[in-house]
Length: 127
Image (tube, rainbow, N blue to C red; front, top):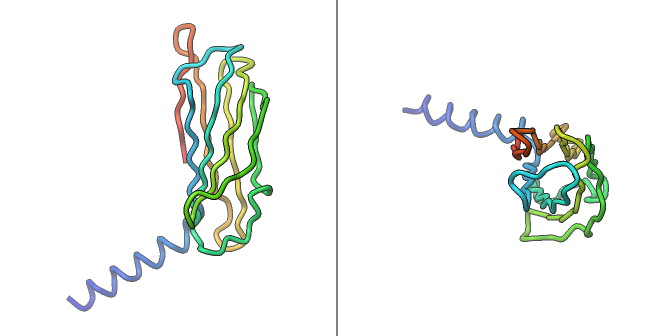
């Protein structure tokens, strides 16, 4: 039983060491088409209570879409921030990747893809 408890704490410790912030991206439109404007909500859930990364240091990598408008980052709760951006889908296979590089946990990223399916696109998220 003692070994099981020690193993549990080792797994708990290692899981906190290897994972950084969680980045969630949601879309206002499930299946946008090229030319359509979409509002995206980016939410960053902090891993550390005192994050050393400024929200403005978050990188946005856009592929086949144009960022039209961005709001300022807003604090939501004690361990999260959120930002809304408006993008225009330029071509099929559009995506937006959001990255934060942490000195303690390396890279955290979130991505949303708009993949064409029979004259439309569907959004998918990957961490």
